[in-house]
Length: 356
Ligand code: NAD
Image (cartoon, rainbow, N blue to C red):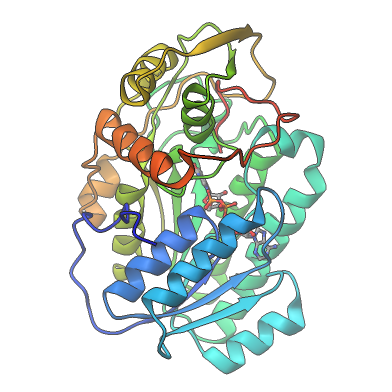
């Protein structure tokens, strides 16, 4: 696979010796990118992923194939399984004894969580609790996990700092992420487990999720298909390039704190109208837009205050939205330009205010 890696140009945090890192959800978008960079800098990676069909599983298989090619030796182990499966996960910990956990596995997506909340409670809350339980029992040095900007859902402000009250999640997905943050605090309090939660702000880039707006939008504009636009186009999101997110995750892995939550975003928003213009520019086609009403559970504005992540982790996003979309369009054309549709026509094909 000669497609460029989105992470190669990320500025690496100082590497503090060899680590064995359990990456849950390591076949997914963010997890596979983290695993790739960990392997590239010499760490060992244990991937656990249930390979669910939330989106086309061939994408996840391709992500694992890429990891295997990158690291054919003994620094990579891959397990297929549910993080909630107590026996299997216990045997993974017994066999692998990871010193670090990077917990990216979750059921993602706001709108589907309203249709089927129980799967979110299972994977996200039960799964995270189970991993923290094993992590404290096996003496894990640092437990880093994916939270989400969606926890800010019911907030009145538009520039979100970690100080903000996040007691008003507006979807089961957001509530599940908030629950993970609460449980993380509990594990830190009870067992002194070092835990860091990372609130990602809409992540996009090469190998991005096909259910998310940036991929869908590029896909549909390039194929000349109609795009459903939820809301009036004034909504604005903080879109974060995958290379920047992975850089932030690695910084969090390398710098354990007793308990912290960080925003990882770009630090400024892009309106839907501007987004359309940038995609049209890089795809080289006009979008065909169908206007749709707002969706329940969606968050109108997201913008990360990233000053805490800068101060404590040295994190700063470097890739502008224009540059990130150009890279994503280049990747899309390389991978899908000639043929395919990974997204069934029956799914909602819109973009709007959904956080993930
Ligand atoms: P993804 O769906 O591509 O990756 C998640 C992976 O976890 C998938 O491969 C899936 O098969 C696996 N998984 C799910 N439930 C599992 C279970 N019970 N056991 C084992 N594996 C399981 O999603 P992503 O975009 O890479 O997201 C990674 C993390 O970041 C998630 O926790 C997500 O909630 C969070 N997040 C993502 C975004 C974003 O914009 N992509 C934004 C905020 C938060």
